[in-house]
Image (cartoon, rainbow, N blue to C red; front, side):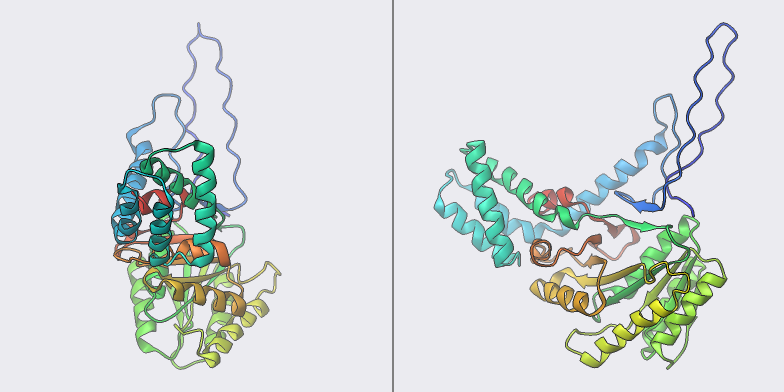
Length: 363
């Protein structure tokens, strides 16, 4: 087991003769697993009694840069909502315009109703008199609605940690796997990729490129049974002492029943490979395209019913006017959102924070 965060502090300097002996610092306690919180891929800086070194500020600075990119990515979604608050009165017309803007952002009827009811209560309790104050209260309401989706992805409780990844074609599934692999490998986690999309040569080739870039191993078989590849990968990961096994499955639509059955078979096979009884697959992730709006919600429901999702990766939020779909997911199928993406670069995939998202949406 290993941790992205814990490092043993440097040995203390010997105390001067005239000075009283300094109390010994307690040894850090190693966590049960590696909890990917705000920046899951950055190592925690070493503790120091003096002002923190320059590198200690790297993570907050990087996070601030990420928030700026998130605001830029969500500007199309947020602009239609924020224009509601340019008036001078808080009246029924404002709530009607806000309802329309939320629905246009694909927040969904249920989530929109919950948000507006909550907002009216907050406005009354705060005795707000300016539309600008209503905007701040809406940020609070959205953040509270989205908070159940904010959960860390834990790596390291089991070895190997087996992660099964699904999604429709074009959602960015294989690219997201590559980005996760890059971050894991950069922090000394040994990764094994399983190319269980066996019938599409381009998918295997794309995954193989990521494997080469990150110097990780890959289990692949042309035209073979996807479940068999997944089974072999788990056994290989265990035999080779890998930390993580990432299983890439074929992209499919939930309406393609025969392919959904194949996906269920892969999951059942992974369970059979769990000879140690650790709960394989430990994570079942779905990659969804933020541009698809309410269709993304339908995908979450369908895949969750079929294979039991444990988390989501939401991609391509940059440039979409449908970023409100996360509110719909939180209201109707609150599967945790582990990561969100606003671009193709490595740093454009980050952990999800409910308040950051709400602020960026109305920023």
